[in-house]
Length: 304
Image 1: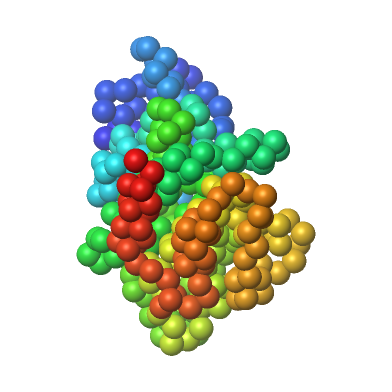
Image 2: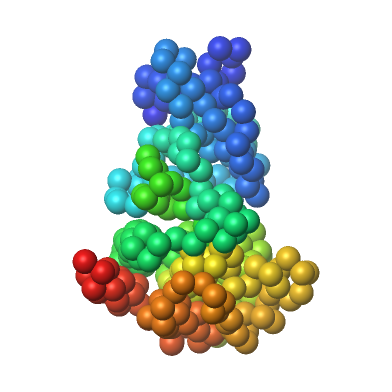
C-alpha cells in the first residue's frame, strides 16, 4: 500500500516504488489513466487515478479494488499491482491511484481500428485463440459465488499484454454481483443510470436499455457483449457501431438484433453460427460461458 504524494519529484508511492506521473493516456467517465515511471529505473506503469466526491463514489471504488484483488492474479485479467489512497480531512473526498503494468502495445480497440483501414483480417487460428482467452477471463467472473457481470466488455477493455497474441481484461469499475431483480421504479432508474454511465452503447445488452420492473439482470449481459466483441474481432466493429456512428437509435437496433455478415470476409459458418448464438435478444436464449468455452476449445482442436 502507499499514498498519493504531492511533490515535484514523486506523485505516487506504493510498496516501496516511487512513481512519477508522465502524461494522461486515456480518460474515462470519472477517471484518468496516466503513464507513470518509477523514479529509480524508469520502469513504466499505468495508473488509474480517480477523484471521489462523496461516500457513494468512494464505496464504488473500494468495490472495484476488492474485485481486482480477487481476480487480477488470474490468466487473461490484467495484473493489479496495488493502490495508493490520498487522505483528506473531508471524509467525503478521496483520491485513489490504482497501479497496473503498462501495456505498451495498446488495446484491441486500437488494433481493430488500424486493421479496419486496410481490411486486415485475423487468421482463423489467432481469432479462435482470442475467443478462448476472452471467454476464459469472463468465465472466472461468472463462476464466482455470487456471479459477477463485468458489464462493459468491449475491445477498449482488452489490452495486449507483453505481445500481440495475449489479451488481458481490464476495468472492473462497471462490475456487479448477479442476479439483480428490478423490483421497483427506483431500482429501474438506478440501473438505467448505471448502464448509461458504465456500459458502452454498441456493446450493451438489450435489457440494459429498458431495465423493466420485474426483470432479472444477470451475467448474461456479458454474453451479449461477448458476441459483439467476437463480431468485432472478425469485422473490426460491433454489429451496432455503424448505427451509433450514424446517430440512429442503438436501443431500437439491439431489440431487433438483426446481424449482417460480410460474405467477402474469410470466416466460415461455424464462426458465424457461434456469434449469432450469443447475440440473442432474450437473455435466456444466450448460452452460459462454460458452454461457449467448450465450443471454442473444440474449434481450436479441429485446427490442430
